[in-house]
Image: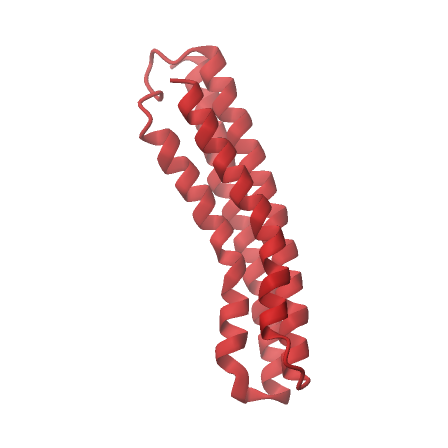
Length: 152
């Protein structure tokens, strides 16, 4: 097994692993806020649930990035060191961006959930503000896509 293929698989592991960890933490942050808000106002559970689930999308971006690179045909024993390093870099960067994006999005959603629980009508505004961290996860996914097309 060559160094290049090992680097590529480490990159894919970072991509999926960091994205998944970030989503798990972000969803837990939202879930904890939901439990607190339910004690004050249980009639808005649908809004709480949607906001709590939103940080889970970063994990999906990590998996989608893995899927794109895995199906690109580059992961063979003929992979070059440049391709392996490119996949390592793409995986690390997408994983890191999705990790931070999911955690911060969970924090934004938790604040919105607390506001809804306190009786404020902030669901729409929370969704708008929660999209900002998501945007950077989407940019990192698009970057992974562009890298995967450029190394073939």
